[in-house]
Image (cartoon, rainbow, N blue to C red; front, side):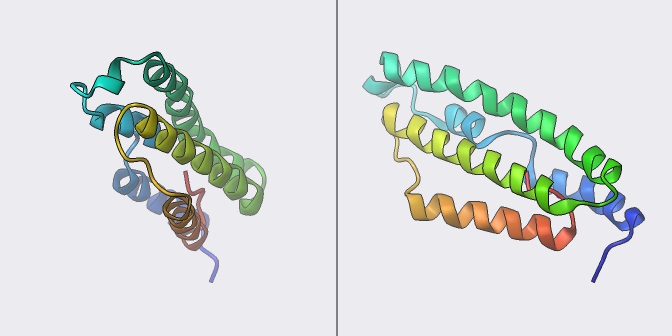
Length: 130
């Protein structure tokens, strides 16, 4: 079933409100135990700093993806693939950050599952996953 442009434009804000606007790296940095000894380590601080790029990428893709789908005449697959790749990279970096800062990061299978769910939701809605 193909969604009309009107449906896509109506569903997109709803999905954004459900998914939130924060990257996984940003959410992980917020949830870190600041009293943990590893939090003060150079590796942890570097991971937190490196995670900032995902915040900017998430904001950019939330704005650019719908526009690219419209400008491309509805070519969803390349945009969905790009956003899925960015989501996977964000989740891997967030997991690495958690591990370096004294928390438990996600396993590879947990990351793969979350990325697959996001991509499936994006494909089902006819919108980018990220």
